[in-house]
Length: 79
Image (cartoon, rainbow, N blue to C red):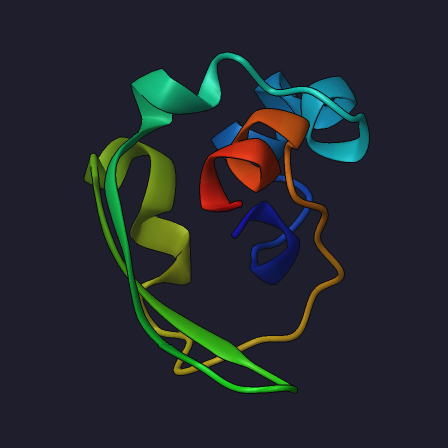
């Protein structure tokens, strides 16, 4: 979701290395609940619960595009 926000928001400033890297263990403290609502070959829709401290800058976006990766642990749990 950080990819949908300006680079100067708190989330991007504090966690730029984690966001651009392969691991982000602090994400559990930022995203409290994330539920996939829909998925097709080109898009996914999620319901996210967090603090407005982290995500208020994304509230006005209806959608955005970003490349993502799946954590190895998440991928293993899905199989």
